Length: 177
Image 1 (cartoon, rainbow, N blue to C red):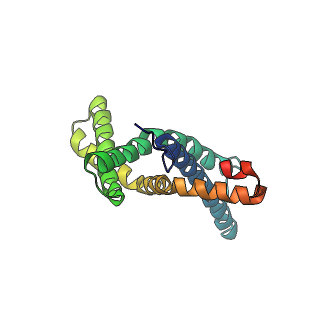
Image 2 (image 1 turned 120 degrees about the vertical axis):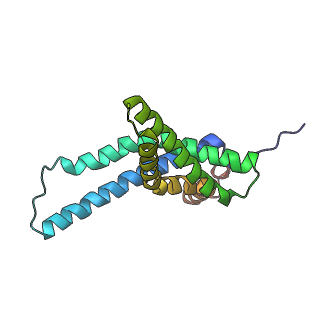
Image 3 (image 1 turned 45 degrees about the horizontal axis):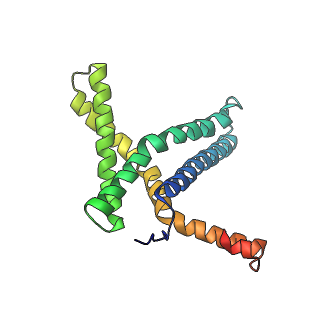
């Protein structure tokens, strides 16, 4: 039986690229938000506060993203890919609603366990409210993660092609990368 070479990146490579892009994008956006806040405060003659606070939000987002992606986004994206591609054999666009449903179920289960351990009397309703809030908050990062997953193979191909043109397209090693 002949082994067929994969056309795209492996599962692990695609998720590593998506993780890196998502965490870096979230960090950059938080830094831009900080710059906008500094400009706004400067325009309104307000008090900015401690200068160290300028770096704390991007640092917190970076650390939070490094936890968020493997704990929340990876399982949801991988689960929706598994369900849509291998179990139900659906078109890849169905991964978006399936991922949202999985994300809400995942958040609900986590919140339900938390509130039951905490001993809340209305754990079911509290978990539902918090899961909806968490799910809607993570919709943007999940969409970014999923989009990078879908385009990571193409981005890597274009990066290698651009690099081979910069380095020199006539060398045999340039096309091998």
